[in-house]
Image (tube, rainbow, N blue to C red; front, top):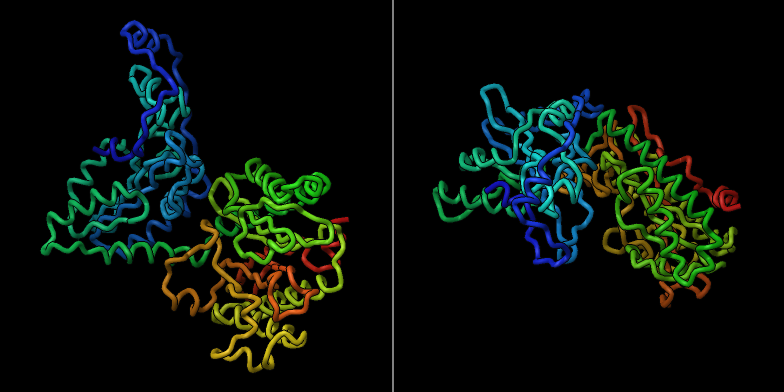
Length: 490
């Protein structure tokens, strides 16, 4: 049952014909050298992951917790998307890019807390059909999988074959809690078993929602390992931006230069980490006014600005999230510079107030005061800046409809299921990491702004660490003032 669950449904394929004769089976199963797999020491993040498991264990005494990594997801017929384990699973195990698809972390209750076991599909022997005949998981097709002993030592975590997960499923009752969006098929199985023992016909999933919330809130304050990973992700991302600037001649020459920006950055992401942390936004000219422009199929034209929002995700899954807006010909025009410096002023004002004890929402309010003041000075608002910032008005938000900050970490929008009073209304603590990213976007057909502003979009985004006494801009080394950006391009 567990084996069937872990494999995503597949369409019939004619891409290969596997020999089935007994002669072939005997031959392919024989004369293989013994494989040596040294037992590794525990990886750096193992102790941190153990502490996270202990923290979540303390919130759920007597409950069985199931945290799936998730199965591979089909992109087209028999082709999968690049695999990425569920973030909660990675956070609690320390397993990132090298996670085995379909794995499941189970915390079973004991008198003193929980016993944690990682269930995954162990390596098949060379005498099995899976070895050569299964294109989804066979070693000939997807490479060898680690042994149970190897992973147990690597992660500092008890391991078991996925076949043995049936025992856990057979014991499911009303006290079992699961991360619902981790693995749809496994969640369906757990739900079915819970209904069998439920006192009513209605399935109770409030505890599942609570677990998702608590796992999100567990990530609000980063530990030392996570902060180090964030520094490394930012450094790799800086290199990706440098690559794009170096490729500017080819980018400008191509009719879909935005695609070259995306490709150049993605190459660095694959070389330095796991992938990009999110789809790169390479928004040139008026495309910069589209907040989530990821089509990236336009030209990059000298005289325009290009807004590049990109981040590299490391093998550990921690990602940076940086935006820089660059003048394609190397120099800001007068109006471009005026808009850019207003956005930078908003970012700097927001950063200046960051310290433990303030509320997260104050960051946005501070940035918006600058945006309101500057747009009022330019004659764009029907009222004064003081009137515009009142909750019932907000005229300036026409030019910046998004928020100024979001938490950042193993997800680009980290801690998204945390309670409002701990997130938006939450009080800052040392160890929190988030973005500060004000912007101004003047749509090309916006008649409320002078023609010289139309089609200009600017965002400056940095990654911020709250320290015991204030804050550190982790991405301060990526040029951000107008003068420094021009020097960077030179």
